[in-house]
Image 1: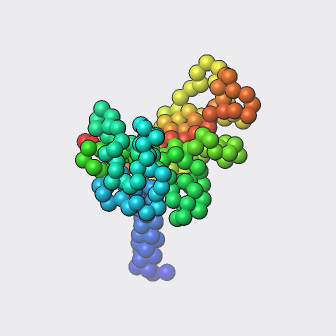
Image 2: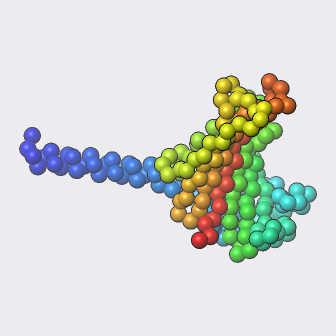
Image 3: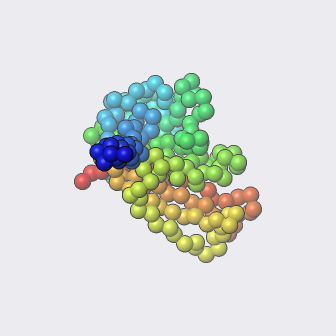
Length: 210
């Protein structure tokens, strides 16, 4: 085979590899459905979302995203809105990657989505909830496996592994415009029986302010 032909083949293979790697590490355009942290709340459609309420005042229901100012503000002037997926457009209910979740959007005083909180539902059925810690891995994969800064915490007094596994992990990663935090836990508290345990994932996506 001629040297020029070998060089051309190598260049093609290298370009394919680079393009594949770049694609694999690309940051998703949206963080959750059509929600991107940092977007104006006015750009978020009402269609596809139901049961909006104030996280700080659950009895206060909202009939549209535009009513977010009805929710109490925290010290930074941010307001948290709980929401669910509309079953008419999401037949599986309010789930992320197959996991039942609790969803909260945090809106700042500039009327932009400052953050998203995605928490596995502690009231899910046992056979689903026992896999809740796996959601963290799926989130990390979605935003690219590289670049995560993870810290594993040790058990406190009396905490026990579940099925031989103890997990209390906090991972963080910065992507353009936002900070990702993934917290995973799997363990049994001293006062819990064999059918009870802590198994959860909490994902926080927040807008970078500096």
